[in-house]
Amino acid sequence: MKRRIILFFVYLAIINLITFSVSYLRGVTRLDFFNMTMSYRLKYIGMGCVAGFIMPFIVCLVTEDIITVDGFKRYISRFFKDVRKYLPYALWSAKADLQAEVATSYLNWMWWLIEPICSMLIYTMIFGVVFKAAEDFFPIFVFVGITMWSFFARSLTASVEIVRRNRDIVTKIYMPKYILLLSKMFTYFFKMLVSFGIIVLMMIFFRVPVGINILWVIPVFVLLFLFTFGVSCIMMHYGVYVTDLGYIMGIVLQMMMYVTGVFYSLSNQVPAPFGVILETFNPVAFIISSMREALIYNTTPMLDVMLVWTVISVIMIALGVFTVYSNENSYVKVI
Image (cartoon, rainbow, N blue to C red; front, side, top):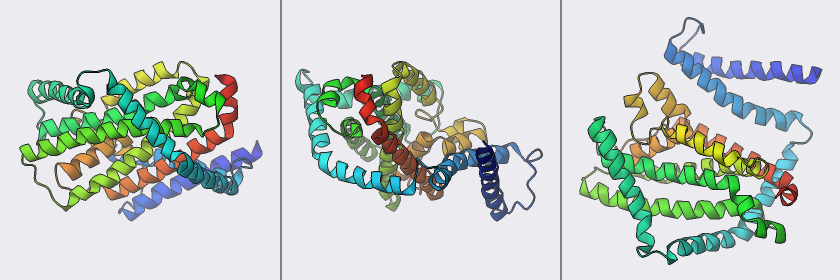
């Protein structure tokens, strides 16, 4: 108990040292929390939350007996070996899912286009005409948000029940359980790429100016995949034990969609400073906004924030994979 109390105060001191140091480097020589502006106060709290996620991971590596550097090195090596070994299966399974999905339908793969296009038309009418959203190239703006949000939400929803839905595979052969998740994410990622093909045609039709910043689309795609995989790995583990997690996840995603800026710009529509803060500290909102900046508005995303969320995504992947490897033997007993 005494050790935990000491670690708590050390951890608190480290977080405040980081936030005070960043403030000092930005020209704030005297930090008075009660008299600072609301904007800076919210940014200070947000920075503390981000540091509060990263620092426990580092502290655990230094202090805990179970979570060790050698243990993570061992699991990281095992992770890359397993990915190389089972990646062909994940790709084959994703291809089979895509083929099975359109095998009995008359329009086949056209449904992958019809659904997002119809959603884009509906939300463009609602937010563009009724609520008079003023963003340039608004149909493309909405289409980008819907497409990327669908990938994240569908992957996260599928992760909760993926072990139970693949009971026959899990109980009969050994396979790292996150391979099942990767297979499903590959399916949704391919559908997202198909939708982005429509976005390219829309950009040509609306004559959207394109510059060198469009190359940032690739890092944004990578960040979206890494963050989604990290969160989904963690949710996949808890979904094995909590059968109601799928219902909870549906409600949370429904609420989260409206604070992510899928249909509108948070920085423009939400009063300052809350819109900018939501767009920065909500990772999915930041990723969608970065894609719009690079693809539609030919501007460079906030690279420092992108780096922070990339680091957090890698940490979540490490924690998720570590958790799956440590508990996957018990999954068979539970399901």
